[in-house]
Amino acid sequence: MNKEDELIECPYLSDKLTLLFPNLRIWKDGRVYQTKELVGQEYNLKFYIYPNDHNLPHFHVRSANGEISASFKIEDGEYIVGKIKNSSDLKKIKHFHNCYKTVILEKWDEIHK
Image 1: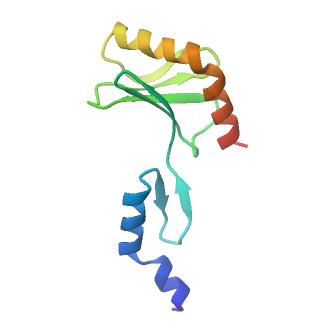
Image 2: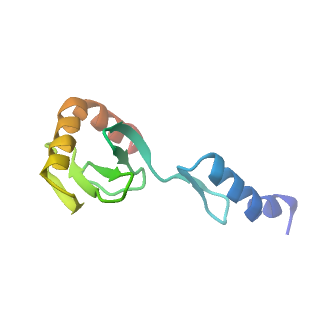
């Protein structure tokens, strides 16, 4: 094993980098990837795009308390899958989508090119 291999497999370094950069993950072979990109937040909701995600451009919504965890199409804001607490939360998500659809789509395109 050479010195480069030792550095790549150092779990202490990997743990520290993950603390500093919570949206990054480090594979054992040294590859680094981004787990999610925050697109915006409003009310108690955070809106994300996952760089390693599949097609059908969509975004994810999460609440701090975990009661909301759902996905929506970027094109029209249509609900895809997940849990939503009530219709009030759905209205907040639709409002965010209506205001920031262009920003969300640009971020999707930037990440997935």
